[in-house]
Length: 277
Image (cartoon, rainbow, N blue to C red; front, side):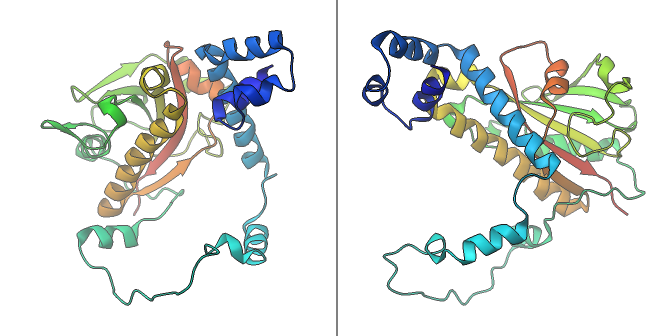
């Protein structure tokens, strides 16, 4: 029944198709579960956890295997109806393109330290109210993303710890989070990073129910688009300032969930920002 519920949620099968394989009673159970937000949320969380586990354990195909697979299937590169290839002989110019050329995923930290101004500018550029506009677009102007950050070290008057960024009022709320100093789990919420890593770890959550109420099953795409805009802003700002940034899809769901007391918030992705020099 759960499998059929997921198929309905993903749009891979219709109600009529499912009713051909199951009894009317089982079908009605699947349809009822489709309306149960908590069940669907837990299913997606389990799936995301499995994907994270695979990437951390190295089960996913290596880059060379992917390249070999795609090179043997040219239909993946061009539509079958292509009749002509036209070269674009032009070198893009402008401040934005200069930043894009410098943009890199950088994991290692240097010896420099962040200042309070660095932290403030990073927050204001990535996700904040700017006059009457937001720094990112959002479907239906719902702005469902909630951004938490972990300071690995003191940044000026901001002491080491977990913070919640109130993007509407431009305030940082420090949160009591015992797991930060717990020695039971040294991985940290972003898998692959040592607990002692320098820098700032951003964790993006989504108030999914807020978007689902308006967009239904399309909410998943809307939410990830908004999160992608925020991560892009972080990357561009770090490119301009010479900081390192690296996005991570491998996050520890249990640790992330321990940060919040709102069960409606779903952890999406992490991004680690490091000083360079």
